[in-house]
Length: 114
Image (cartoon, rainbow, N blue to C red; front, side):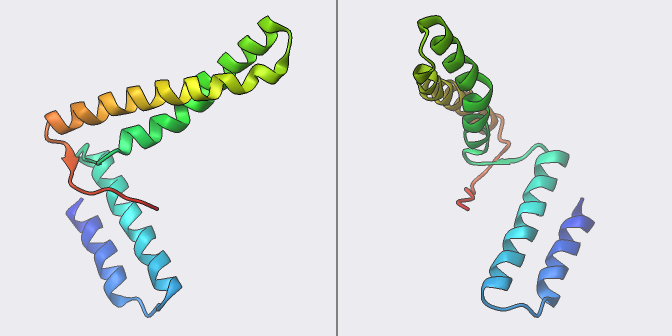
C-alpha cells in the first residue's frame, strides 16, 4: 500500500501540467489515494458514508416509495414524494456509519468537497 501511495505522489511530483490540468491531476491522484486507504485500511473521510448513502437512499428507497405512493393514490405526480423520504433515510444511515467510523478511529480528519 505504501508503495502505491508513493507512486501516486511521485506521479504528482513529476507532472508538467499547470493550471486547470494540474488541479484535475491532483484531484485524480487524491481520489485514488483515498480509495486505496478505504479499501486496504478501512479509513474513510469525514461524511463519506453520508454522501454515499444520500444518493443510495434516494435511488433505492425514494424512487420505489414514490412509485408506491403514486400507484396507491392513482396519480403518478406523487412520485416526487418518495425522494425526500429516501434522502432522509440515506442521510440517517450514512450519519450512523460515519459516527461508528469516528468512534472506531477509522475516520480521517479530511473532507473532500468536489
